[in-house]
Length: 367
Image (cartoon, rainbow, N blue to C red; front, side, top):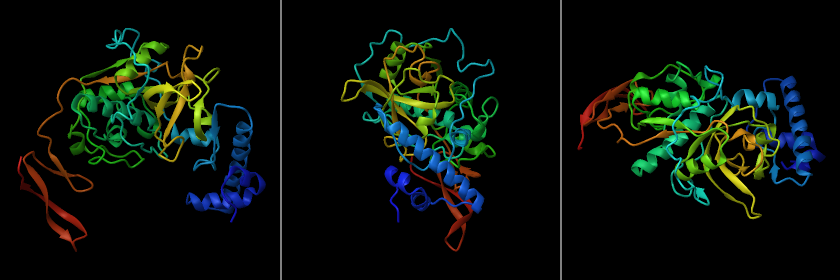
């Protein structure tokens, strides 16, 4: 079998594509679809090879998205939408609590334990939800010392007055929803399905982690973003380009990059690489096999006022000062349509051959 490498794909595209489909479990409905995907694969191989042949600061590689055109990829893996005012920000007079903070020389919130493992939005334009939970998880960790993975699915299903689930959304609107709802449920309780569905009202009421509000970082202000990221992980919007579809490693150069914001991600730190090139450390939501274990590095300190790929245009973050809600009820079962009040725990009162529960009850537990 032809190995799946860039050289092999150039020498034997059909054989490499067969290896690709086996490696990633790709199955196509018809011969016509197979040929279409093979053509996309060949085009992407040429695109990646052409980029890697130049002296760039970052490399591209074949990955699970290599059978998609960029047009197809962006319809399912991006999803940032502007607000009702046509912008990505609340307003020009938003407060900024980190104005007088002295930015650290470098910071890495992943190493400091404030960032959950990389997640995967799959074929759903819910990047805005992952960006929101990422910064909220960090804020909660800094306030409580607990790293709790929070529910993107709750935002996709329940935050629907302004955001549009898999059809896209905006982090500021998600923060507004979370404040109004009194908090957000955990990933464990309200797990991710990668499709929109009916809001589970019981789980929506499980406000395990709360925030007090949110703020926007001053627009196109790199010093301000550094102050904010020095203080906590920050939700940021970027313009995801075709190169990001196949990003593999290195610092993505920012001069002349696009600024049409279309993707929500998390600024998890900043530093310099071995050659002294400054970068922003960005957590993505395309799975841990993409990029640098799910992360990418965007060039920092460029002359373009919007920053690399527009990263300075619409950063925001949650404010967390108050304690999390207490006396949260426990949701029973995988679908969670029944619950037990604080002080009791779910207990199966009727099961089917010991395989799954048909009826739930509640039993007392020690507090």
